[in-house]
Length: 344
Image (cartoon, rainbow, N blue to C red; front, top):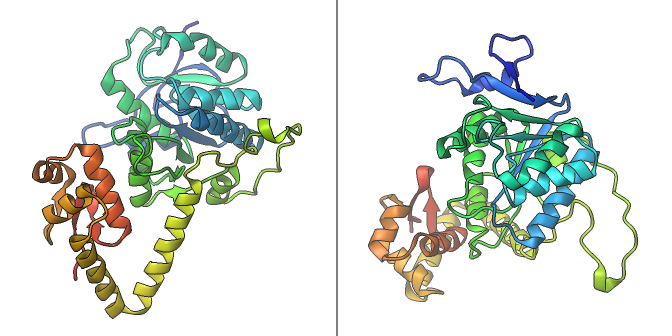
């Protein structure tokens, strides 16, 4: 089955894609579609290919709950979180869209060809910005993520490492002014470092479908009925967070809010408390990595790569230390991945 081409001049062309036009690109891309693009508002759900079992279960539950609440579910068709999002939508009989990184004649990954057929058969669509015979290429996946973010009202990141492709979709959502939602995850977990960074960058934390819907300004979905299970076989309720890091994230957020309020009320306390923390961390230091990172920073902003060079730490360890020190107000994060010591 050949794809239908939708050109920017066509009346049916999605207007949000004009936001992708830059100085180097005079018009948004031509679209190649199999199936039917849904009229429902869309939510993108993305994450790592190497997702944990808990994250995959949560993704299916979240996608199903959002689908039952009247949203279409969009993702990239990849292994892991993407596939679970499509499966959850299909379970709820909600339309789902696969935004591909290559042409439709080259399904990627190949083992998902049957899943893509089910998506179209169920009333969803396959969408690409390149002709059918175009093989998947790395650069096309970055462009795919921009289209995914542009055509949806919100992007939800489930699990993402520091170099996860899901973070490019998150960056596109932020750049385009779309809502960016992230499931909290422990910053010391390789699968959670990217999520923690996105939260520090201003993403909204979510733990259930109702949180996403509230951010979008809509009514919360009705609870999904589940058969009763014995305690041994019980699983998290639909749309709630099964990841073990939710309590940690909630405590951290509450503590950060309390400290921020105290500093806003008393500017002198703001500088004094930050200085006391910096002095305490410099002298004591919970880990060798944190002490090394703190000694490598001063009042001048430094990029993460520069911190790695100064300390000899691998990127993941350096980022973990920076996150901890940032949450303690010992280090301040600026734009473009720059960090500096907090003023005393």
